Length: 193
Image (tube, rainbow, N blue to C red):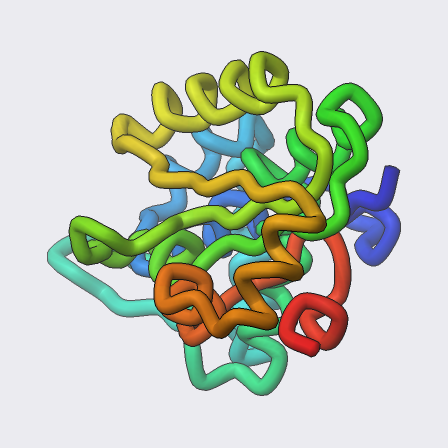
């Protein structure tokens, strides 16, 4: 299975990317990152300095601590977010257990879900299309809900139901497809066309 390690040599950088891009709105200080990453403080500082210098992260002094956070103006911010979402946490779990989940055609995360923004009551966080083994999916989602301490609103459709609703311009499906999204499985072009 593809992972962030395929693109990066530094083990510490992989861990920092996972921390920052899984929670892009959070700010972290060095010792906090050292504990979360389980790495030596000098290695973490070295990577933070590199990432700050390249503009991937920004830093801000508050009191006697230096805080780091994602730079949403970085040219490849959205690409890095996509990579992290697809290879870690819930996205990575779905991709690694794809065979056990059945015949998965599409998995789409809403932009609000990815960026941990408050969603409206009727908005869907995850759309899954295919012949899905529901108990397997439910177990994966429950684990992610426990980690996030938040309910995940997901919808599962068979390929035929999805195609039927898309052809009929079903308001429920169109509301899902009109949101910003990240494709975890399948291509965005195939999803909307």
